[in-house]
Length: 407
Image 1: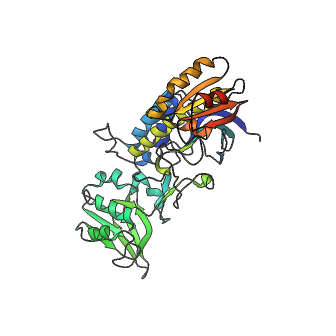
Image 2: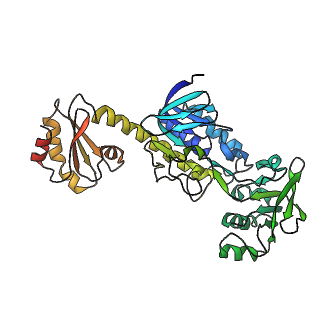
Image 3: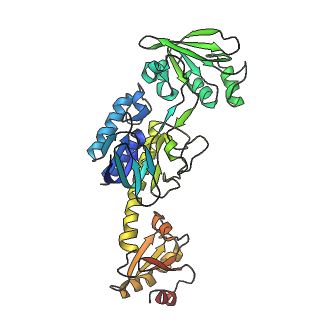
């Protein structure tokens, strides 16, 4: 079966808070935008009962309710949604290819906002209690809902112990299931000492989860002692799993730079190592993974895509045209040396009308076009002939050098 081909300005992979925010920014910039989500628009946030730390909602909001607002706003700005899985991508070159089972999508830019998923225990009954039925992965999100209750934390790394201590501010008791022998944890020593001296925390050593039990909602976790194989039923109101997180980046391996954990590495503009490919949200290597930080990432990625596409169009339609020779002045508006040359540039702008296309490129706000021209220092003159770079002048920019270059 031959796949149909659809063209977009930008394709966003992932429909969580980051992807939806990026879609809002791209749609509002009147870019033809497609958002692909393989399961539920809103991502993991939709499974959170209550979000109290997202600004603008003093009474709190449900994760599903908040994400529905994001979704509605993105659709308002014309974002197209496809509920399907991305099978493969080809991100090199100016046209990016995103493949699903039935369709090939071509785009000028791609935003990866594919998020991730918490690592599960694989224990019996686990699937029936995920997210809003008793098993949680975010103490910051769900701690308040466990005020006065008993909770179980599975894991002993830094995240598990620090989140467990946070839970003690709300819960009456926090029980920690630790894989290792008594007194041994995977967290740092300071966190370990603080946790073991916390009167609300108790530890069950040498254990893993054997089974999750309950009816409509979790009410017990059965632990298994690894040495004695004894089964230990623990009555709980909720269970928090902190045994790792798996970013959804498998299809990008070998293409996009990522750390040892598989998280994508970006700069502050959400740019990856491939030009025209951006990443946002929990899929990034970042300090804090929350709805609020995902929104920030998505906003930056959407804005960056807008600028990238605008610069691409300027680069091809104005700078690299072959119908007329060109001269590009690459400068920085806050650099005194660059400003001193402006009268000379203005002189040639006037003298070369109809003969040479003169363009000014200010790197103060963005170095995108300069990078495409291979310019790393300013001020700089680049001349274009037959749609190709002819000369690059960085030293001794003067009347004689420019005259010789544009002959």
